[in-house]
Length: 292
Image 1: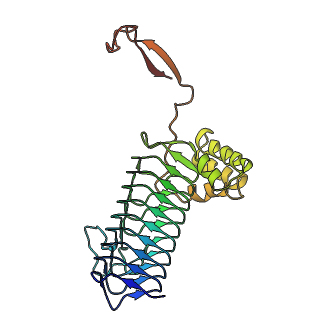
Image 2 (image 1 turned 180 degrees about the vertical axis):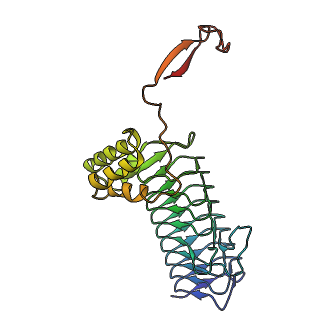
Image 3 (image 1 turned 120 degrees about the vertical axis):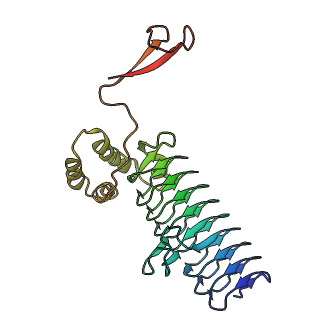
């Protein structure tokens, strides 16, 4: 089918444009780019050199795909951006090329990148992920299939987010997020399994129960790290629980801890006037104190 290109768009003759592609007003398509069949580019989209788009991608206003990596040592010959099929890339998203010409920033299939999301150089994003508004991935971050990253989350370079993990809004991710867990946005700590996401993905109650046992082994058993890995490898060898061992055994940054009280801690209610050391926050008011 015919390609529809708005008269105000600038499309290089050295760009490879597939069938039934729509290119909106004021778009810029640079040389050495590939736009697959049935892609739709709204107005002011910029597809820069070294970018490959698969089929059926929908790119919204102001997105810039294939920009140079933001790095103090700007490469003369950067790598590529390779994007799969069926992705929705909303307004003003930016995705940058890899640092080395032999590498690529990779985005899989059927992902939703909401407005203003940023994917830095050398990132790896799987399939069926969701990135809410203003998510920031630093360089070399990996996000696995079906992960959900909420609004304004910032992820430190080289961190990984596992499959079906759910990261709460405004979290600061400085270590790896294991698969299947939920990160609380306020504390940036693990607060349990992402059971809603797993059920939506079709996981049975029995499968989720097995993952709960593996989760308690990791976060609540009190075992040493090598012992945890040994138990995961031997006792949870079948998927999907086997993803825990695969992920933890390959971490280089460590994993995000759980947000819960230390073993043996209790919550005690104390009156504000019970102790002279307490701040005077009003007669008769109660406050919570953690004691070990």
